[in-house]
Image 1 (cartoon, helix red, strand yellow):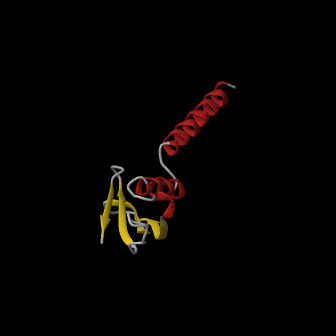
Image 2 (cartoon, rainbow, N blue to C red):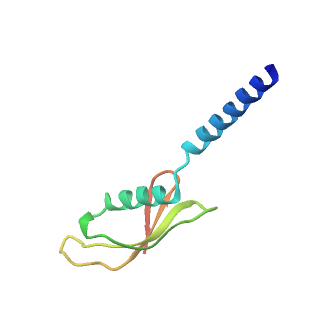
Image 3 (cartoon, rainbow, N blue to C red):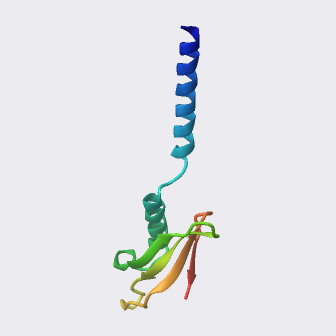
Length: 95
């Protein structure tokens, strides 16, 4: 009986620690949504933003990369510009 109780306690502890480890990591969709929000915050007209080729880049300095096209101060679209959203939550544009 005591062995069964110890086994159940260990199983519960391992399950809880596994859930805690996974809780701190964002899913790819959540990370992309965070990146898109960060990119929108840098734009003159965030509502005009059009995104394409947005994906999570594993194993590099950029966590998310893609392309964005948005309107400038004159109301015209500027053309698609590549962006990188890194692990430090910084947005970098590369023309």
